[in-house]
Amino acid sequence: MLKNLRAAVRFPSFAGAAVALFLAAPSSAQTLTQAGFDAYLDQVAARARQQGVSDRAIAAGLSGLTLNPRVVELDRPQASNPNSVPPPFAPYRERHVDSARINGGIRAYTRNASLFPEIERRYGVPGEVLVAIWGHETNYGSYMGGFDLPRSLATLAYEGRRRDLFEGELIAALKMIDQGVARSQLEGSWAGAFGNPQFLPSVWLRLAVDGDGDGDRDIWNSNADTLHSIANYFRSAGWRPGEPWGVPAAVPAGFDMGPQRTDLVAPRCPRVFARHSQWKTVREWKALGIRPQGAIPDDSFAVLFEPDGRGNTAYLLTSNYRVILDYNCSNYYALSVGLLADAIRR
Image 1 (tube, rainbow, N blue to C red):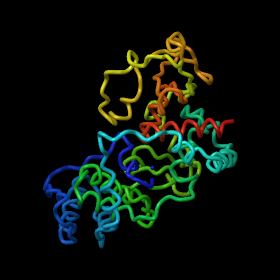
Image 2 (image 1 turned 135 degrees about the horizontal axis):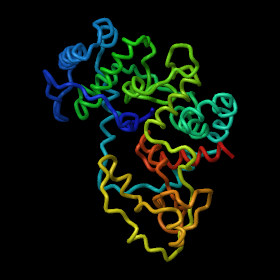
Image 3 (image 1 turned 90 degrees about the vertical axis):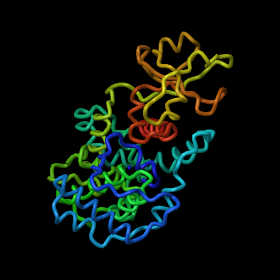
Image 4 (image 1 turned 30 degrees about the vertical axis):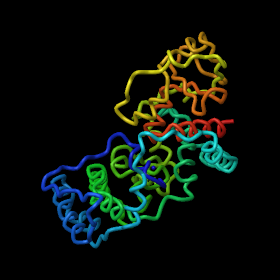
């Protein structure tokens, strides 16, 4: 999964670390020191052993690590402002669903066309959706990050703002070494994601697939492994075969959105889901005057989302859109993935 902190928050099943011998997380007012970092790594090593990680993997992953101040600098601005107004979607779409990314996606789809019949049969996820994820994460493998993963994860865990998350991922990276992944392979984004699909270590352990049958789950170099693994992630997150992610929709000028708003508060990414309406069937939306601008069954359940307000393109979004949000909980990310997939398919 990445270039920014979304890599560290998009997956639902992070491996939380045990808290025995817990070292108090440094507050923002405290200075991070190499001595404190070394002491913290000793405790991580002890917790990793409790989880069955070998001394060989612990030594390979943790020996000689130093703090990375750049990772801390990149992480701290990521704290969200709950009162901020969402920016407009249109500029984001122009940057992420541009002609270069569309044409690159068409080429990537064509090069890997022989893989998609089996992948779609096995997982139920269309090939263009998988390619769109690949394109958004690493521009079809052209950049995967050059940060040392154990160093980044250890630094973020020691810094302490989300210690359980990053420590769990650090221990998962040590388990990857135990499972045969070369220490030198563990490079990626500053927030700990790696490979073509920018998985976190815990996600690689749980969902990466050997798609080409060579005995490795190589999401760095194998397109088959990459695409099978993304598809496996989507299937695990609940992708419904045969249903679109959503379609653009036209909303009448006088439409009253008030009665359609939801009172539900999502336990995860609440600000993302708060912008969606209640669930209704497409048939019910049509009866209210909403006009889908694409193929979607009348009995599909969908929410209405107007990212740029009335008078601009709205979207009817199915449960498969929620699966894309599971990969990265951002409305604009998920919308642009769906729109890129549509452009690749055409």
